[in-house]
Amino acid sequence: MTEPIRDSLPGMLARAQAGERRATGRLLSIVERGGEPADALATLTHPHTGHAHVVGITGAPGAGKSTLTGALAASLAAAGSRVAIVAIDPSSPITGGAILGDRIRMDDIVASAHERIFIRSMATRGQHGGLALAVPGALRVLDAAAFDVVVVETAGVGQIEIDIVAETDTTVVVLNPGWGDAIQANKAGVMEMADVFVVNKADRPGTDDAVRDIEYMLDLGRPHARTDGHSAWRPPIVCAVATEGRGIDTMIDALTAHLAHLELSGGLTERRTGRLDNEVRRRVRQAFELELARAVRADPTLLAAVRSRRLSPADAAQLLADRVLR
Ligand SMILES: Nc1nc2c(ncn2[C@@H]2O[C@H](COP(=O)(O)OP(=O)(O)OP(=O)(O)O)[C@@H](O)[C@H]2O)c(=O)[nH]1
Ligand SMILES: [Mg+2]
Image (cartoon, rainbow, N blue to C red; front, side, top):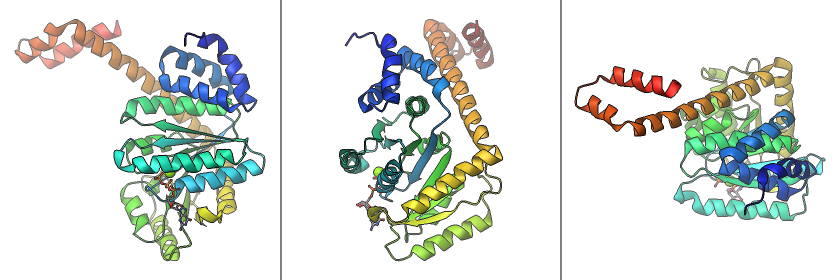
């Protein structure tokens, strides 16, 4: 319990780099718990990063993201790559069963003796803030632990997904035939984030229609698409049957092509720089918020004076800002 975590961090990182999954797991637990040990870990791991291809896989619940991720990881690992998978658990109780399903399927993959695959779930716990800090930290650990590809799976189309998509180099949007899936995704703004489309469950009717819908929407243009590295990149559409491993090779080709495009266009540097800038700003904002809460608690008369009209909100804000910045 009271082991000197800080002293053993470099040792743990070395073991993680050597492929010891338990060490990687312990490092991620440190990230999740946050605080000073997590900051020390960030200091240690940051210089070792920038090598992993970070791939986000998003799409509606049940689209086949986990099956696809598993097949992708198995294929990459068979070709000699080390692959880490981070599954973001939706905190909604409705999908509780699906989480368990994911765990079982993913455990199967691990049990199938793919030494080069590491899998971890991270809970959202309904907190944007916590996850927003934990995800970059986790990706940093996995990158530093010398994984070649890090896949982040998220379900749904909420703010959390959009935040996490921003943490990746390549975003895969998984759609299914039928149900006007592409149109739903378009409304939710997910289409705009896509670097690669996968129409999964291509064993079902309506696959051609789904591809046509996506092509049509791409023809219309994506006014809010990411500007970084998007120039001259039209997201390819891959048809897949994840359960049978069909389309996985084409998907890997698409991911490789996108990474090459990013490298060539300067988009990779732009995305990664933007990410780091954002993280720094987020941390500063968090530090300010903490100090602000402390300053408000320390002087309850201040807000009382505003409420009783003796002090204007602007003057109170100025007073608090001065105290926080001092
Ligand atoms: N017919 C068919 N079924 C598939 C295919 N891929 C996945 N499935 C099935 O679809 C269901 C959902 O697959 P998952 O991989 O759990 O989907 P997911 O997107 O990860 O789901 P959540 O994590 O719950 O959002 C499972 O029963 C899979 O076996 C496919 O290509 N064809
Ligand atoms: Mg899943």
